[in-house]
Image (cartoon, rainbow, N blue to C red; front, side, top):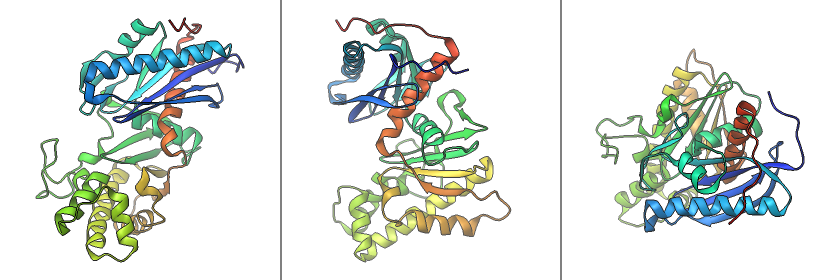
Length: 321
């Protein structure tokens, strides 16, 4: 049960990505009191990333102390495979972590109680409680970026399965397709992620592009190669989402990432593709995410407050030194 909101309390929320970190102090009502952004020094190695996360937490704790706020919990969310129950970063390829007891390590370094979670599941939690899927009991949040991952909310709860749930990007949609870095062939990520779309366009035309947004712009101009690449991506996404809808029956599917904001270029044909494939199924609403790139950080704050409610954590902000 949630405690009564106190204006002198907050949690620290930190979303650690492959290139940058988004941090915030968040109050009981998910109000953001202040924010801080930092670069993720992944080129310097996995230990340097842990050092940077530690520094970010210490900085936010110090700012909380300056504001006279008591920090009840820190919520840290990271990419990859995350076992939230054991608080272990099982595997994060772009950060160089494997079987890292990250929460315990950060607690030892900062003196803060730390909750560890997965960045996409945190984003899904935020969209369900605060954003585009607010009020839904069963929802699917799909983040389309460099890769593709999903958060599954069933009966109001996140499905985690030891950190392995939601790997939508590795559903095989083209059995004889391109090799995927995971070791399989024809994974959804190879054709429908931002990186996959850009690579497919370059392979078809010999013209280098810097991302899927550039392909979307070419599509809007009537570029035939962009149209072919885009249609293939939409077909793959519709196939994967049909499988997900058949298995999970969500009320709403939320698409996050820059591609979902591309002026109907993705959502409209994807809705049509789903409509053609679904028969007796529960037909979900398909909507764009509402919280943008803040979803992961807000979700980290929600995780932290959930932990406070569950454990009754009581800890003041530590000395920043």
